[in-house]
Length: 99
Image 1 (tube, rainbow, N blue to C red):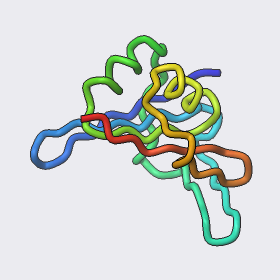
Image 2: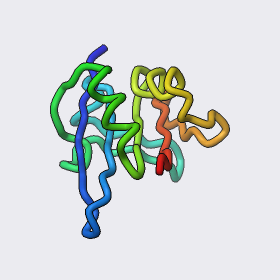
Image 3: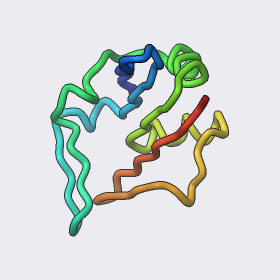
Image 4: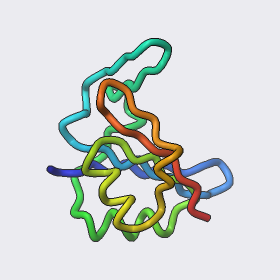
């Protein structure tokens, strides 16, 4: 599974990242009032290797991790609290404050 990385900057210069399983891009998922929309530019970055993505996660203010592979990477890095996972139609997502 390949991972997609999108790096954003806040107005005050803090970095936040979106790490998304590449196969989710361009898709929407809905379940009741919950939804995940991966059709927006917010998630569309570039495919990167996990080592580089880990460096970006550890140097960011906040990370959004979406999809099974992205969540597995976050768990390996021990930055995800499983009790905060959002799951929509089997697609997991976590938002993590790093620093």
